[in-house]
Image 1 (tube, one colour):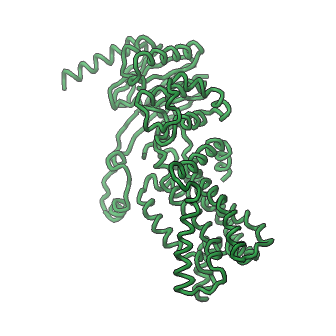
Image 2 (image 1 turned 45 degrees about the horizontal axis):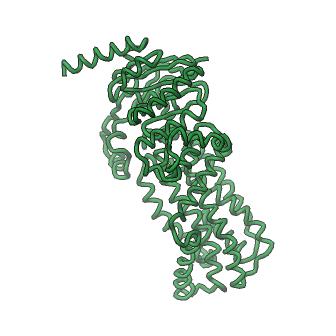
Image 3 (image 1 turned 60 degrees about the vertical axis):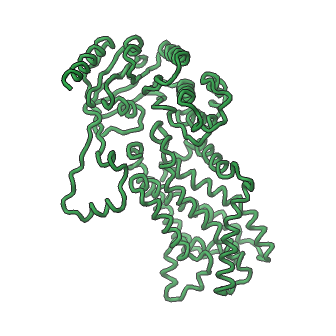
Length: 258
Length: 252
């Protein structure tokens, strides 16, 4: 894990350039530009609100606010993984012809999506306030949650990126897996709706813990429950160490497999 | 301290990888269940290659297509790791492999110069300082903000070469890139490489241009099917190469 930290620090300029590039690429040539970052969640929010608040009648005040406070962190995670999986393949021309540090590529995906997420935060706050959701002291826990999600996303993105070089089915599998996971994770419904007998199982999902914590802080205006987050922190450390070890081991094979 | 030391370097590629490119779930599963796995086939790209290059030497790599020149360059560059033996380099290595060493086709020339420069060990500031010089040498000013996928192969090569020589490397690895430049530019590249020679920098040049190797390199290495077939003065090595190709031509 320390190796990863050192590598990231050493390549910070490269990461900076590539992140700026990816953010620019996304909006270059589009009329609405940055608004696209918001349009996709907005559209999802409309549909989910219709389905879950109107059809299924999930009884939560200001349901769109609840939904948004989970959906945005979720989209950060899922886009990081989707783009992370193909990141090394997409960077083939860099990896095979120079001493390009391959670990930078998945990192850039996670960081660029993190930047997108952070840029939408002010709008999320405005949206919450407009719907009458109070924002209070629990917000101090938000940076912690963001760091936790970043670490987790980084670890998993590194692993899927490395595996996908040799096992390219993963980039397709991951899309479906993320869809399944989105429904199994309390993103658009509160964990309290899960029948009590199943709830402990559902909360074994690390993302359920994370999303519930985001809901707590942003929507319920309360501090998240710490023990599961501590467990999540431990998990993030394990995943990151694993990812570093895996990358160190397989990195040398990338140039040949591409 | 020698600039490049290769000790009995071997490199093999799995043929399965070469054929299908990647493993799919289906092939992985069939392999899982099949009782008689086909033995993995390997292609020996390099076998027991030993080479010591003192600082300031200019070495030409010659050999037919598929003899292992590019693999050797990539091993020295650290892009591939050897399966056997050891490869050690001393100093900053700048690599020019195929067209545009490490350019991303979707990025502009300017972005690629920065990315490349940083990969080769410069800081953003240092690149900023040399940027105009790099662009001027490549003669590419009007196109520097266009994505490099729109570049002609000559433009690609000029920009790649320009970055590679302006990062102030200790070791310059050049793989068969001068072939696409026009005469004027190749002339200027050679001038630049001559400067490098005078400054005591180490150059390894893989080329099919035997006349260039003979005229310009201090030493040459002939690779045949991944083994060192001859090593020494360029004239002797090239004579050996000509003999072997003539032999192959007569028999096959």
